Amino acid sequence: MPAAIVTGSSRGIGRAIATRFAADGFDVTINYLNQEDAAVDVAGEVREYGQESTVVGADVSTVAGARELIDCAVDAFGGVDHVVNNAGIDHHRYTPELDPADFDRIMDVNVNSAFIVTKHALPWLEQSDASPSVTNLSSILAHTGAPIECHYSASKGALISLTRSHAAEFAPEVRVNAIAPGHIETDMTADRHPGEKERQREAIPVGHFGQPGDIAHACAYLREATFVTGEVLNVNGGETMR
Ligand code: NAD
Image (cartoon, rainbow, N blue to C red; front, side):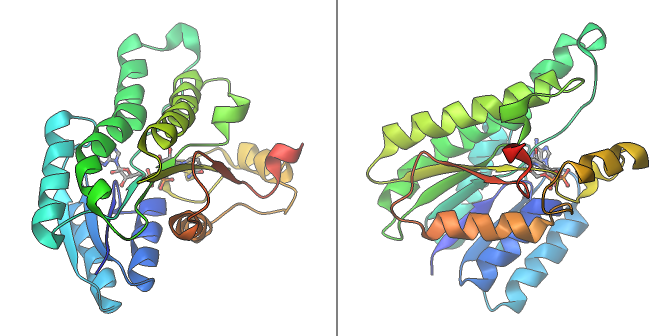
């Protein structure tokens, strides 16, 4: 049975991707930072689809955490066929008030994690005969930038460069793509001011925010798209047309 790892999959987009992969016939390694109960729930959902699941608590922004995640996934499933680098954090500060340590933390979690998880998974991905792939969760802000989120935007831009570099380096054995979501309704976006949310919604041509399942659908497409590598799939209701 092919096996996937989804980082940060105890909630939100990661959870939707993990259960979508299970629905599509994959065993899934669920990774969490500090929400063990929620991660165990996701593993239960995976099993309801008749697939196996293992749960690994690990901080993927550290080399030790990334290594542990891959080792546990390989112990459970004998290899790795697909990696989704989904774990990420957001933080809002104007540059004059932005502590360089917070800038570094965003880069560690959002970019360095994707590098080190992919690096440790690579030997296993290269052995897979299931059209192995890596999918990195970037953001619309990689393209547009955003006031009060220079560090988040920069991290998501770096993920696109990492994606293209890894796609070139790992071809033809392993495909690497990115998804750049627009506004998706999750805990990450829940605390926005209602007025600000309404302004954001009006900027979206399809007239509504995205749902985690929209990103899971894009991720399933990239997993199956054997002629696609080094690409960034924008999933944002048309927002970047404007
Ligand atoms: P979320 O906050 O609901 O989930 C993020 C998950 O990552 C959480 O489960 C969290 O515990 C986990 N995580 C954070 N740091 C971690 C670490 N060091 N190690 C392991 N796990 C860690 O956010 P979401 O909205 O589901 O976002 C998922 C991804 O999609 C993120 O990379 C985010 O930047 C990106 N994204 C989200 C949106 C959106 O509108 N929600 C838009 C663009 C991009």
